[in-house]
Image (cartoon, rainbow, N blue to C red; front, side, top):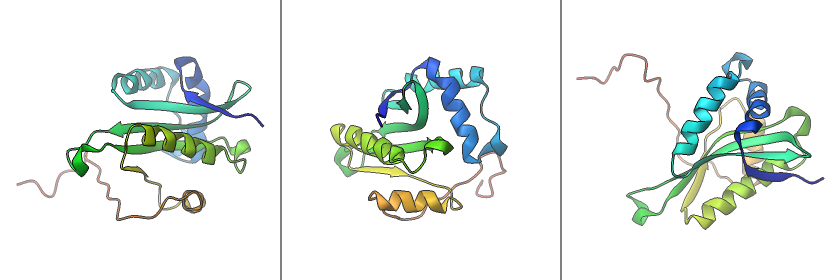
Length: 155
């Protein structure tokens, strides 16, 4: 089975947005196509932030975003952050996720990144097993805060 991975283009967004409705986030409500286009253009305005897609015969079967971030620490070596990883529910267990992560790793290596990271919701145990099976290691803690809540740390 031939799966190609490439940077997404605006005409791909409709299929990609549908994929994000499958992963159980946002109560199954994906972005509108207009909002998706707005976000896509904003992502493309960053120097090294891109949306990638895996496809088979023109059908989008997976997607992920990759940000290469400059750093002051680690002797200015950049780091890679993977976000929004999804594989179409009918295409899972066919090594598409593995191929997408290998693609992201190749980009990260070519950019001189000292690490590639991602975070995954605690409830997605199957995803955690997948990431560990391809070499990701649990590392440290991930913390989150809703910035719209009143800050208890404000002075």
